[in-house]
Amino acid sequence: MKFKKGGFFSLKRVKPLVMKYNLETSVSPAYDIIEVLVLAILQLSWSCLTCTIIEMPDFEPNEYLFETHKDKGKEQWEVYAWAVRDAMLKVSTLKECNIPLREKIIYEGYMQMNRKFTSPFPVQGEENQGLTSPSTKVAIKKEEDLKENINTAQQ
Image 1 (cartoon, rainbow, N blue to C red):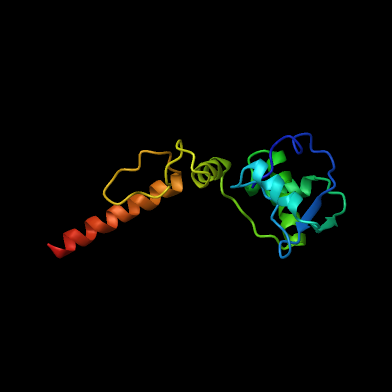
Image 2 (cartoon, one colour):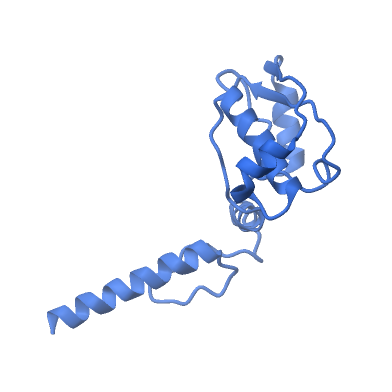
């Protein structure tokens, strides 16, 4: 997830810290598709949750950063946030995830069987009446176009 404006708008120096949890012997502390109460119970049920903390050097923006990477954002804080995030990803070897928060909320609601959020995938023969992410709409449109092309070719 991309960083928000708050910590970077003033363009002050930041001290990035990366926390990598050992997921081989414990539960992931990520609050993404599981309710907070269930997550807390799962985490408290493990006797040890280990975490490696990577302390990075202070990161202070400068004009060279803004000029070299001006394609990474419209405003200076966006370039700064991108640079800090990129450095943290490289140091931690974590994978980049650019899924928008609104799509994660739809997925979380669906996984928690919330009736407000129907399946992000279309049901065969029915229109999906629930909230559908933009990327799912594109996939549905491509599938419909492909079916139409096949039908046209068969005639």
